[in-house]
Image (tube, rainbow, N blue to C red):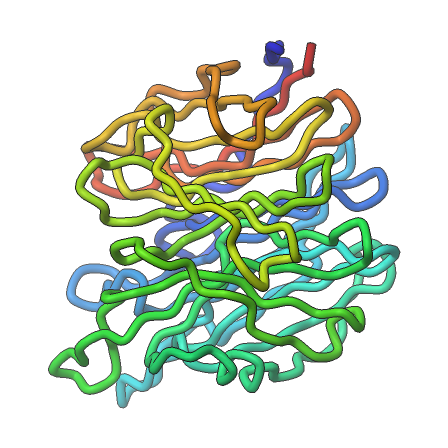
Length: 343
């Protein structure tokens, strides 16, 4: 297995389009196009609250040979004078046959879904689905999906990684810390109408941002960000759609500095992208496993910089949508789309 790089495209740059910074990329293939979802963040200086700031969600529709066009924007683009939070966070795209869903959160406490029935060109109104999160046997005050994308299993079940936290409240009374945390997934067996809690991963220190892929034998492979001392990704296998875990282990092959990663099934196995380092978000690369995540081999050195990333595989072509950092500015400089051919 190797990947032959073929194209690079900068999708958005910081301090453009009326926003300070763009973050948290997600990608999904729909028909002959790609959907690109991400957060658009405002707030300079003292008004920059990071993950808890003034954040909108944008979805772009990208066809081969054309420029991306905006098809969805969620948010209000400005914090009110009283400081009330309007944080729209963690967009996750989910395939569902001829339909496509997007799940997102407001202020890390209320969860919504929107649906497209025409390949991502137009979208429904938002509908709240927070009730599904109340099924988790965990007292949380922070909730988030993904980031990245969810999946549709071969039997039609929709599965979306999630994480929950029960964090201390900051002095402003609105923001909450994102730890301690735990991760798992939600599922829907009726095309996104209702959602229910799957298992939460046991024995992982502050499991949070998670990706998932279905293997050729039908099992689900989960990949967890965490704060374990070994600075490795934690993997989990489930043979019942995420309701239980058959095995959970730390992967010696997958170093991680504490960053979101991408995961996608491909012919012969599964692809994984992350910053291949222990302490800094550098050396963004892609690895391949043909044995259900037991071992991994590097197949693509993507960028000496890096950050959050997500993967889409279309036939023999693989796409990675990721953050490129600007170390001098201390922020994400660009969201970049690269592609390559699988050989």
